[in-house]
Each structure stands twice: as C-alpha cells, then as structure tokens.
Length: 389
Image 1 (cartoon, rainbow, N blue to C red):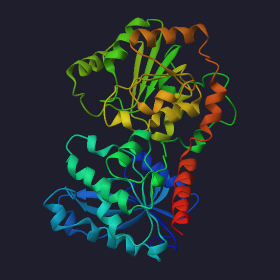
Image 2 (image 1 turned 180 degrees about the vertical axis):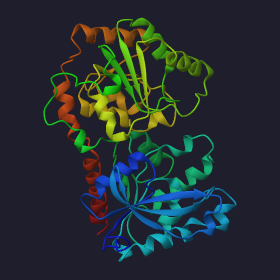
Image 3 (image 1 turned 90 degrees about the horizontal axis):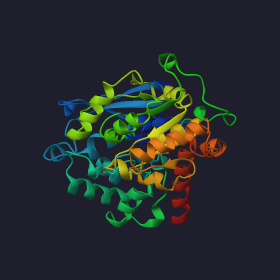
Image 4 (image 1 turned 90 degrees about the vertical axis):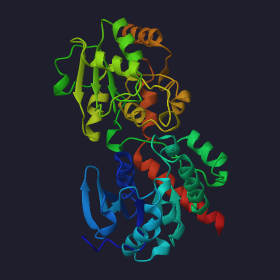
C-alpha cells in the first residue's frame, strides 16, 4: 500500500516503539486498520519533518517513523517546539477522515497531541511513568490529568495504575478498563502439555531438572534471593534467558548478580533472544521462576513474563514483588524468601515437576493473548461512545 495507507477509520498508536506496544499494535491491526507511530529521536529532530511508512516484520504491523527532538517533553523545548503542532499535523496527513480515526496514546507525554486530536482518544497506560528515574514527577502527573480528561476511554494495564489515575489524576472510574499484558496467540498451545518440551539447542546439554528465568535480567530481579536459592538447590540447574543491559543500582544486588553470572556449571546464561523465541524456552523449563524484587514502577505494572509462562503452562513460582501476581494462585505459587523458594522447588521435584494446574494455565492462556487485549480496548472505546450518545 505504501503511502496510500490513509483509510477511513485508521487507528493511530502513538507511540509503538516498545516491544509490547508493538505486539499490541500488531494484534489491533488484525481487526481494524492500524498504524504504529515510532519516534526517531535526535538532537536536531525539530529541523526534520519527513515521515516514512514501513512494514514491520516481527511482529508484522504497519508503521510510520517520525522525527522527534530529544528532550521534547521538557522545558524549554516543549515551549519552542510543542508536540501539538509537530506531531498532530503528521497524524492528520495519514487520516482520511480524522474524526473517525481513534488515537491511542501510550504515554502521558502525548497529552498535547490528544488535546488537539479531532477523533476519539484512548489512553493506554502501560507504566507508572512518574516513578521512573529522571522524569519530572509533577509534569508527568499534570500530563496524566490532562490525558485522562480528554480521553474517551482510559486503559491502564494494572489495578494499581488504575487506582493512581482515579485517585491522583481525577479520572472518572467509568472511563477505566484494565487491559493487562499478554502473549502472542501463536504461543497458546492446542492441547494441555504432558510435560516440558525439548530444550532449545543452546540448552540441550544442560542436565534436567532446569529452573528457568526469562526477560530483562537487571534491576527488577532479586539477585540475592536467586543466589541463596541456587546454593540451596545443588541438584537443580538454572537457565537465564534475556539481557542484562544495565548495572543494578543496589550494590548488594549487583554483587549477587555478578556472583550468579560467574558461578558454576549448573547455571547457563543464553543472552538476549527475540521476543517470539521466548516461548521455546518457557515451554522447555521444568519450572519457571519469577524472582521480582518489589520496586516501582515494576510493582505497579503488568507482568509480561507471567503471560509467557502462562501460555507455556509449566509450573510457575513467583515472589511477591508484583502486585498483579498476588491474586494469580493457583496459576502460580507465591513464595517468600530463598528457603521458601528452594522448598517449593524441592516439592515440585518430588511431584516430577507436575503441580496439577497445567490444564488450568492452558485454559487461562486462551484469554490472555494480545488479540484479546486489543479487542477489550476496542470494546472500551465503543462503550464510551454508546454512553455519550
């Protein structure tokens, strides 16, 4: 289609640079015409205006890249080159009938665009943005209030973000629809599993049983817990699948991570993998471990790695570092300290790593796909339109 992608009611996702927003945009595009907008940051972004249409391949969705000035949300840049002019005009050029084109904003920084958008607006809030280091908390809270005020539907991905938006951003509860993280529909098995799958080639020589950890292996992980648990389970091998891009701020946790990385033959780090390949590992583990450390903004979000393990249907052990997971039993087992985690792993070993909830996880995973999440967000917008009419 090239540049002829302007359709009657295109859904614009602003922005779709994160991997999970891209998964959502891909799923949304299976039922409605959708464009994911991907910013290209530079120090001379305000001197550029050209947008570029392209087809993303993994996951597949239609995207438009657009230039964006670094520091666009901070003073004085936001005064000199406001988003409501430089971004809104680009969106309008890709909208045949703008009043019919929903705009899905995925960050509070796009509130100025939402305020000028002639069509319906959805705030798809996937992070407790004010809790990130380096952001101006008051600015973020102000933008959250502005975006909630203009949005027809507000779709946080967790209860805690929903509570924040209602209590501190003045969002009416009737606007709220919680849309959690998810997994690809292709990851959902056709039948309940009878045991772990064959190990991927880079783990094939690792003896069973294997406890596995997937995802970002940095700040959100309780490395002290892992180090202690590994020492208490000499009969168990461990696989860590993901990247560790940044140092851990807590010196004790960073020291524990370094010691785990440099430990013995029972531990294997595979390095980063494509998002679509994570299921190959999740399905092959004897047990999955979600060793979250309680910290913001992680604690208040939605656990994407839980939904990957849910689709794999293998036993899951999780710490209490993620509020969303506190009511997920018996789909997973909540654990306390390292002794509790090691004890539960030993109990799974006695049961041949079959906890009896495999079929329940398999059934639950059918409702936890990105397609299901996209449909839920669409229903929220339709219901808001019905309520206003």
